[in-house]
Length: 369
Image 1 (cartoon, rainbow, N blue to C red):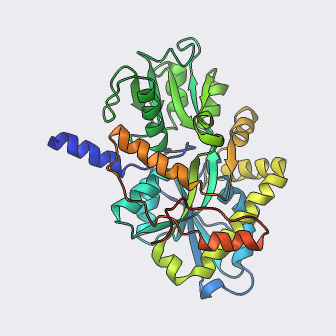
Image 2: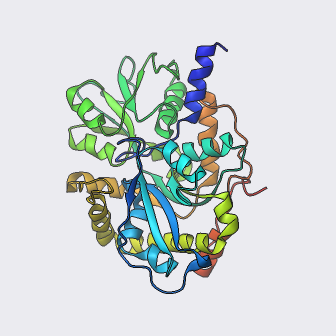
Image 3: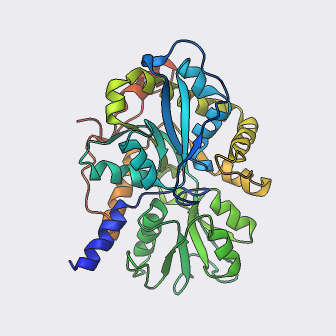
């Protein structure tokens, strides 16, 4: 392998997933502190901790922490232990924050979780729960692309080299028989890595013909005249695939299991509340997005409504699909085959689910060693 190729591959391996940015990979790279608590700490401290530090993205695929914070559900479970949150716009920074103990628990996409685990040789993090499935689509300019058999010679955007949507598009194109260099994006179809925050502008200006992107970017493109030609759910068995996981620092999990359990309990209760109060939950999500410390702007109804509907919240980490996504990255030439054994520890999640009268979830053989 040439030195240049080696550097490109190394860069691709280190690039995590995003989720649509607002979404999956963009809108900047610096974490923003969300120091406001919707509910003040009250009662005994969990594990004697003054605070639990959580991280997430300001987008619809991270609806669980956004809505849970807005409604005070996380603070309620943590009692006198304060919730301190940081908002990220790209996976690498969140992984760095976890490794440096700037956060304890985070919501993040599968690619950065895989990369973080592999780069640390299985010592940095554990996936402790699922959070969201789906919410990714191929949206095109209908004047330039008539359908899925009309992609040759066209330019399709993804959020970031090696991110989850980038890998998904490369895998799809390969199965369709198109030849594309995974690092440069050049080939029968041009894959253009574009920050989600500028993708709608690029689409409207005609510099891209379509984009394989998460919510709410996909719905923004539709609102700008685009047409959804493929919902990625159709490519997965049962229409389910992981887009957002919960991860925790292994040291924090070992030292403060009661705090981790409290956060998991809040997550499960938040997802249940969202399912039973969809209209109120959607409004709570938009209210949180409007916070200057999150996204700073609420979404219009024509974007919010489909973006919220297209994301399925789930406690199940959908572990089998994580392995499949890793396999896709390896086949695309963007990742050396990782050993994912031990990446999951679902012990506390299943304890919470049992207490809530819900069935346990499975780690697909990738549980703690």
